[in-house]
Image (tube, rainbow, N blue to C red; front, side):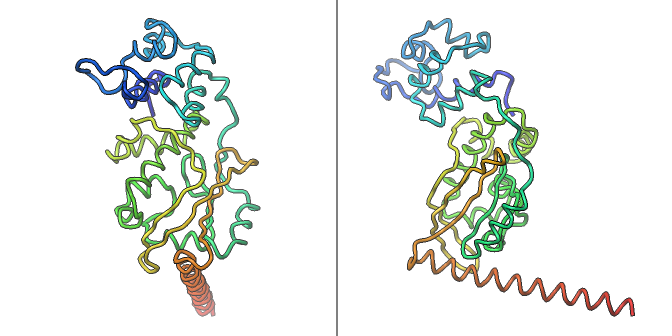
Length: 292
C-alpha cells in the first residue's frame, strides 16, 4: 500500500496540510512544497531538526510516546489522526488481532430482524459481509454489492447515487486509512487499496492525503432511482466479538421525508422478496416437470 517508511510518509503528508499561519508562524518567502518545513515542525514539537529529519526519512524508528505526542500537537492532529500516528510510530500500540473476514450467523439474524431500516455489516477492508433486505434494496442500482470502496470508485452509478460523491469518497478513504493502521498486516486491505490505487486516480489522490477518520455517525444524502432523494442518519457500531467489523444502520426521524422514503423502500424490498420467492417456486416446478 505504501513504502516501508509508513511513519515518514504520514508525517510528510500531514505537514503538507498545515499552513504556517495555522500554528502561529510567519509565512516568509516562497516555499518549494506546501505546508510546514521540517525545521518548523521540529521547532513546534521541541525536538532537534536533525532528529525530526531522521524520523521522517526512516533512519530513526523508535520515537518515544512523548515525541509522538509533541509531533501530533505540532501538526494539529485530531484524536483519530493522532491514534494513527501512534500506531505507526509505536508498533506495540498498533499490535492486535487480525480482522474478522466473515459474518457471524447471529449478526445476520440481527440485521434480518430490523426490517424497517437498512442495515449491513462491513469488514475492515470495506467488504459487505452481510446485509438485510432494506440495505440490498437501497444499493440495488450498483452492478455489484460487495465492497463499498469498489462501488464508490469503480461503478459509474455511484456518481448519481451519492448526493455528494466528493464527500462520500473522501470519508470512505479516510475510514479505510484508519483500518490500515489498526490492522497493518491485513492482506485484504492491501489488495483492495492496491487495486483501487491502480484503477482509480481519484482514489489514489485521496489515499495520498493520509487523512484518517473512522466512521461513527453521519448525515447521508442518496438519490435512489425509484424512491428519489433520501436524507438519512447513519450510525455505525463496532462489533466487539469481531475485530474490524462494523454494523451500519440508516434511520430517519418519524414524520420526515426521509422516513417516508424508508417506508417506500420497505415496500420495494418486500416486493423484491416476493418476486424472488415466486421465481424459486417456478424453478422448482420446472425441475419437477423435467423429472416426471
